[in-house]
Amino acid sequence: MNNQAVECHGLSRRFGERTAVSNLAFNVPRGSVFGFLGPNGAGKTTTVRMMVGMLRPSAGTVRVLGMDPISEGELVRSKCGVMLDNVGLYDRLTAIQNLQLAAKVARFEKGEGRKRIEEALYRVDLWDRRNDRVSGFSKGMRQKLGLARALMADPELLILDEPTAGLDPASIVMVRDLLVSLVQKSGITVFLCTHLLAEAQRICDHVAIIQGGHLVASGDPNKLGKQGVPTFRLTLSGGDSDKMRRLALPKDGQLTALGREEWRVSVAVPEDIESIVKTLVGANIGVRAVIPEQVSLEEEYLRLVGSEKND
Ligand SMILES: Nc1ncnc2c1ncn2[C@@H]1O[C@H](COP(=O)(O)OP(=O)(O)OP(=O)(O)O)[C@@H](O)[C@H]1O
Image (cartoon, rainbow, N blue to C red; front, side, top):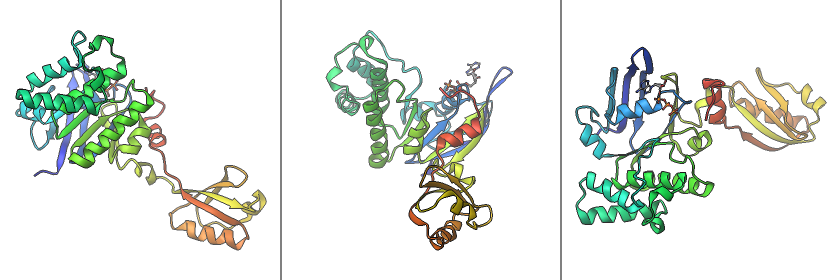
């Protein structure tokens, strides 16, 4: 079996004169959580629409679960749970009726459909509201119901566009835990379009950042910024500024005071921290903590995407 859930090569899509997606190349390993990040209008939805066969690429290829979403569209869609931006629920129907309709479209046998609906409603904590009309639902409840509908298909690949938009903090944690446990227990793959960078850093194994239709970075969200300068946060005792200024640091080493006893040190290579600690101890400065600083995905995102609004 192909071990990539999604493979894109040179994927492009134009709308008339406008290029929405240009020469995208990335892979999404099976059984991972993949974060697809980018500002408004970056090309995320266009990419997702090509992944599920709703749009034909202008150039390049995308394969989903080893299949071509255009020529094998129905099969691809039957193996994917998709929740797009516009959740697309029927307001006049109740929560359970919406799912019954989806079960009918998916052609589940009656007993099987009932079991899946019940399970999905419990998973998103909407079982008690199953007989309420969607017209009375909050945005967050709609999101949860949209997620339940996507989960009902027991998908191999779950494609979610901003699944936590409009959710309260407790529900955000619930959705996050649900996604992580789905990946761990059922081995499904999650493709997550999101603007929540801290969230992406916490749950994604890989991320890709796009801007203006181009891929600007991809990789492990905790390592993306580390091509930059390695930094450590130090908690010291007895290190007054004069003493610290006189220290002989390795080449390219730089100390910055953050507080009375808190310092940040940047080094050329991570191994340099060892000689810095020896120098500090040799100068009778107590070293109470040395913590490698994680470059936040947010910092790296803003560096790459610039000041473009991220909302
Ligand atoms: N059907 C269309 N016709 C013309 N232009 C389109 C069409 N669909 C998308 N575009 C354009 O393609 C670009 C990418 O849009 P897309 O919806 O893929 O961005 P996005 O990253 O999903 O943005 P958002 O986060 O705001 O949803 C935008 O400039 C958009 O106006």
